[in-house]
Amino acid sequence: MLLKVEHLTKKINQKVIVDDINLKIYQGQLIAFLGPNGAGKSTTINMLTGIIKSTTGIVDLQGLKPNDTEYHQKIGVVFQNSVLDQELTVKQNLLSRQRMYKKKSNSLNYWIDKFHLEKICNQKYKYLSGGQKRRVDIARALIHQPQILFLDEPTTGLDIQTRNLIWKILNDLRKDTKLTIVLTTHYLEEAEYADFVYVINHGKIISANTVDNLKKDFAQNILNVTTDDVQGVLKFLVDISYKIQENQIIIPIDEINAIVLLNKIKNNISGFEYRQGNMDDIFVNITGEKVE
Amino acid sequence: MNGLLLRNLRLFFSSKTRVFFSLLGALISFVLYLIFLRKMMIQTWNSFNGTVKLLDLWLMGGTLAVTAIITTGSALSMMVEDRENSRLADLILTDQSYTKIHLAYLFSAWLIGLIMQIAMYIVMQSYFMLADGLELDGTIILPVFLIMVFSSLIWSIFNMVLLSFVKNVNTVGHINTILGTASGFFAGVYIPIGNLPNFAKDLMKITPVPYNAALFRKVMVNDQLTKVFNGVPQKMVANFKQKMGLIISGNSTNDMKILLLSLIILSVLGIILYRSNKNMVVSKI
Ligand SMILES: Nc1ncnc2c1ncn2[C@@H]1O[C@H](COP(=O)(O)OP(=O)(O)OP(=O)(O)O)[C@@H](O)[C@H]1O
Ligand SMILES: [Mg+2]
Image 1 (spheres, rainbow over the protein chains, first blue to last red):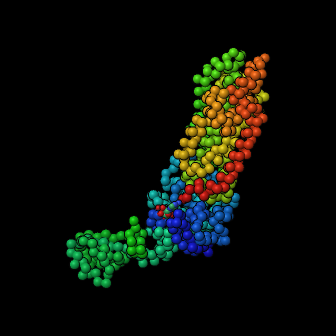
Image 2: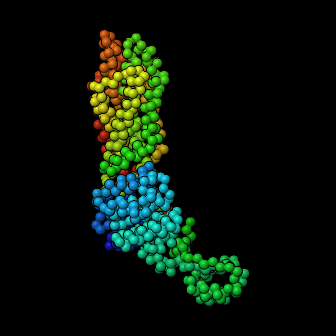
Image 3: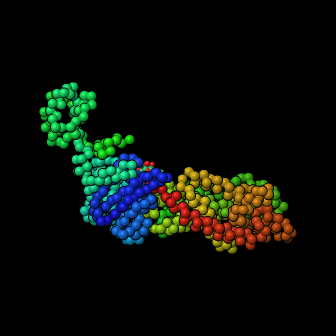
């Protein structure tokens, strides 16, 4: 096991922000913390990286504690907001951070190459686009070759291309170096590649499972049909659960069965929509409450 | 720590506006002197030969003290920016200890203060050389340099203490504005200390500023003073020294002792405060 977390709790002014979190993370895994705004994801990451102290609980990375200096060598962190120097160039930024680590690692050019930064190497950080900044941020977090990378909402606000590029690099690294990744996100899609997902709400882990199981159990795909002939449609919905909202019928159902069903009811409906289950569904289904 | 030091210096000097504004307070005192103050002061001391050069050197001394105060302050505003933008958190996550990170801020402020004093000195000396024919006195270069080194150190520590718990860039801007204005008064550049009411004098004397300015002035003015006041009664010379803030606490040795004591007090304070501020100033992700 790489990272062990037991009973991690954070109280600020008597308010419990992170409540008794337990994690077991193995080398090479991709772990996602999924939760709405204010769930306590960043606070948890901050405790795992040692930026803030936990109120109680243990964080153990192969015998190291977050306030040991050697711990820093083993972790890389990509913050929710960028933390590099606006006035320095990409290269100066990376070089200055690399010099702050004792262990000598891959040359800068390796990372510049890997993240396709050649063209923007000598550009000031402040003039980069959001996606370019993010690539540099991640390169910065990996520059000392950590074993575990923490990413706080890594791809929020990025276009598909950049998102794919980042994920391609990260996946390569996972294959080549067995890099372990812990990320936080609001979106189920972003947790798609994760080996394991911790769903967090109000500082508590309310579910811990693989993406597939989570989807199966709590976020089934939804078929939403619009019809003037509700009774006519309902005749075909034997043994299938559904909800009626005025002239709409909401039916949790997988793709194949949806096609079969649609074929049967095609003459009774005026339109339909089919969508993937999302985080909201998971929350509604686990907690019975809507995400505010 | 070298990496961090280099980064801090690079950040400071890469922004021309930052460099310029860090010197603004000093430039203002210089320009005010040229436009208004010089005339008034010359009228006071005009019965002597060579007063102009004497006052030029006097002004340079005070302005260098102001430069040390404000440039170290603006160098350390980078420290506050790092706190506010979570950059400090990122730096702490490297192999560098919090102590080293702090020392790097201190050393870079020290160096920046020194470099800016030298720059200011060159600007003023060149100007007065052209305007008033003030020749460069080679013998004072080393002592002035040493005082610059000392002033930069004491004011770096002072500003570090002052900014111990500040993690907001706006606040640091206000603090530096106040510091810039106040330091000109406290150094007795805008109005010589002798022309101030007693209360103001006493207020100035509880800060290290006038002592620092006095140290500069004494060394810089020395030669010119003997020339100008050649054959003039000792009493009158002493009067000049008192009025113009070349001596603050009776004699120069005392002034020096007070400065050293301030350095010690500030250093102790600095150490105590930096040890307790970590949890307060590190912004989270
Ligand atoms: N220093 C603090 N003092 C008081 N409350 C805090 C403090 N830090 C965090 N909180 C509260 O703790 C809760 C969790 O915050 P956190 O930043 O961990 O959420 P998050 O899951 O990262 O949310 P987001 O998705 O919006 O980034 C929030 O309700 C926040 O207001
Ligand atoms: Mg967050």
